[in-house]
Image (cartoon, rainbow, N blue to C red; front, side, top):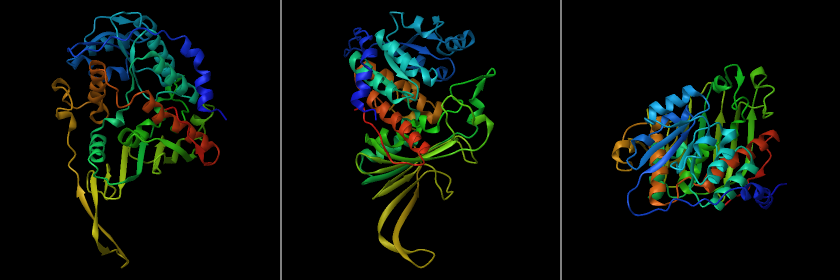
Length: 398
């Protein structure tokens, strides 16, 4: 079995190729971060051009029409036909990689070698070996790496993080998270060609769920048992990943002895989106109310007893509707970014988090260690599903 030590040793060849280009020094004086945007579909949905501490220096996409769209969105005159050309630009100090997932690590290594800070779309990596390469490369470079996980910055996740920081949950012992994307097969082909999403194992895209716990408490997933479901649909057959599953559901144990259930489903009669439930011994928080009250709810424990419909005694609970704040309207964001944005308001927060980290020289919430901690457990979960739900250990890259 490959160990973390083996991973790190195997990655030394890649790390040795990285240059130790000097990081732009941080000062207490306000400055403008000069960013390059790569990837003209997802990359065009962020707000770097609106941030008061940022300039979009250049954009890039392999397709001319998408380059033009990026230029229009970001009001940017400079465009390059490839990432490789963009990172030669000495004015670009940071790069947002909104590129296909299988390219994330390769592209990140190129940027780091050129002395550029990196914001990467999810997932951080596609294999455990890539996780090791990524951690080692970022550590050696001394540059800032951040993964732009939207679930960390959705409005209800910000609420949950504040509840946790205030101690409202008491002991947060269990979290359940769902990422449901029925109809994902519509993204399997483009212009008659298979895309990287064709047959992608659901648990290779786990970060929308794992962020709901790890992005709040900082704990790690250390063990998993997972089951998958598939059918005989020919669309699922003969994929590059040799994946037989549309849906995968995993139960994880954390390094603090807590548990997390993760359900990543591509097919079925379910509502699309990301949702979480947080269970504490003093308070629980349901982002989607199962009782149909029309919104998120808080459940508070009471010392009094009541009887259920069968006449059995149980602890009484208080159920409250939660009026979710629009956090994007608050001073958590600079004023030009105080508007709604993609993925339930998260894109403005991701934009600000990355720029603010570079301006202030601080660590991002989802740094490289958090990024692989969000990503790698899904790879092990998929292996568990292929083995009929075997309980497997999740390697650590911390």
